Length: 112
Length: 120
Image (cartoon, rainbow over all chains, first blue to last red; front, side):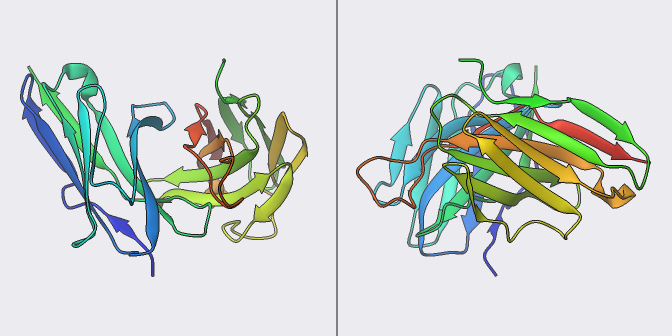
């Protein structure tokens, strides 16, 4: 069935380092992808999105890369800060549908 | 804008009782989504509405669950009767429908703070 998976359940990084969170998706018809950040006790917060006609998109300290050939999505966070500690979810939207299918999530732990 | 508003933030009830969760979407958004989040199953879409009309309820677990959207600024998710396995965090999200593209396209979904439900 359709699924979005994450390779690493937990990622630990040092403050100031760059973080890379990876995500594999299975539906080649997906046309829209989103990264969300979820802090403890809060709802998922939008970080950045990318459409399938792009392979890279940059935001403030974050970059999303899309490789449709291998159906891979990544989130890069530059100069990781303690406030970046959270669970990060990728989500895909299969083309023709309004549904978002979420991955299991990756916990990012930032150490001083 | 205040963002998506959900109430209550926490609900503790006993098995068999009726539970009603409430959501106010972001003003102007014409899509509304209800999700459930558990450790075992992650974030699951239960149902979504477009212009107050339910479009897809295939994620609703069973007949004990029902959702309504009587107007553009309010939606409810009801569980009757509740069971311990319904314990989870329930999120509401809303988004714009994109103009100038097929009606099934939507933009980014913005989530509320969630309601943590505990059924004893």
